Image (spheres, helix red, strand yellow):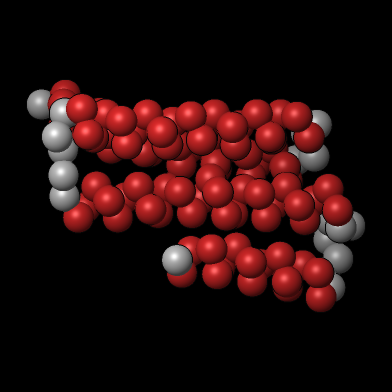
Length: 109
């Protein structure tokens, strides 16, 4: 039972790191805190793939979950980090639209 759940749990932990990274970026925590959470998400993403191969867990649901969790950590979190640290918070400009567009297009892959 644990063999089937572990890859999905690691994917959800990856998404949690991405969500925390977004939250820390928007709350104006130091840059290294948000960046560290994204790096931890990268580690968890590698571990979930390793666990899935090790336990031979395959399925479209797991692959979809992994892709959605990757969008949070590798698209939305860096976009939030870039927006907060390069542009003024609260201002809507072409740059913020461009940043949102980049995040959305990352998810299309």
